[in-house]
Amino acid sequence: MKPVLIVDGGTTNLRVTAVDPQGKVLTRAEAPGGVRHTAVDGHNGRLKEALKRCIDQVLDSLGCKETDVERCIAFGMITSNMGLYELPHLIAPAGCRELHDGMKTAVFPEIAPFPVTFIPGVRNTADRVDEQTCSRMDMMRGEETEAIGLYRLLQPGEACVFVLPGSHNKFVQLDGQGRILGCMTSISGELLDALTHHTILADSVEHSFCSAETYDRTFALRGAAECMENGLGRTAFSGRILQTLGGQSAGQIQSWLLGAVLAEDVRALQRLIGSADVPVYVAGKAPLQQAMCDVLLSCAGIRAMPVEPELSGRMGICGALAIASGETAAPCR
Image 1 (cartoon, rainbow, N blue to C red):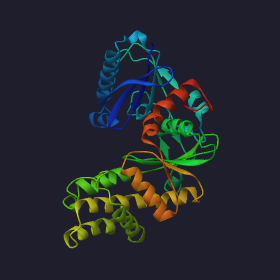
Image 2 (cartoon, helix red, strand yellow):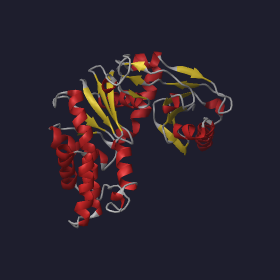
Image 3 (cartoon, rainbow, N blue to C red):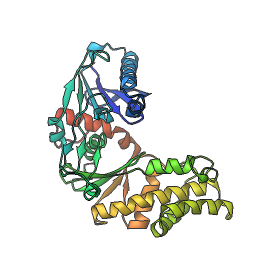
Image 4 (tube, one colour):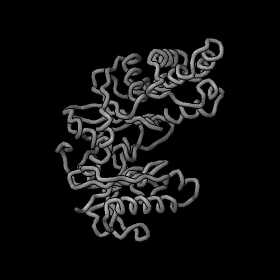
């Protein structure tokens, strides 16, 4: 059996997953070695070391040799100027065929003897970017592959929006053929992290995010509504008021802040899609996925559909295999 290696190179971590030709996961390895380290170190040495270590670990686990590898496909920030092999963004609309045609292959002997095929990212337009046009511009590296995969897994058969939560929340628009029309990005996850760990609110939330067990829908929706009316800064501080003078629990304040941060995304998403009739699918894990669905419905009347965790976990692999093979319509198995 000749495994296919899928490399997901992110901002913080790098993951290598070995799959069989049908896309079944055989094993995976993960290591800290994202492009953030390149920015800090001034070179990509740590990324190269992490990739080699993960590849070796995966092959050892399978009892395979480097010569056994059928193919290695990489996507994400690994194709940025701080990654391993820089590729320019494609211009939307871009689907499976365009991404396939935009792939490039290179060999890095210090990492492995086999070639690595890189999938490019996507940007919204080819327009010149300045202070007047930047609101229409956005870009992604990695989420294009996940979106292509998720469309094949779900097979919605119509235009839709995918919400891909994370440190940077991504809202990806696709047409009825599964082509990417553009995206919108926010730094909601980083904002929540900053509020939780690096402001006066840290004590109120006990330096922690809400979990699936502590998520309080009522407080999340009240925080979202407060933010829509009074803005994030005031709403965030109201969390301290609720804890100090109102005696509310850390879990309730955690949910309050999560709802407030997501409300800003919902406001921007309303402007992006312009209609509550466009199907919206939310990937990710609890409680972020549930909170996003709750806030979308409460603040914008958008009844979003949660993506099953098993599908969320497969979308990047499915997308990478589909793009690499040039498939244009076939669903993932």
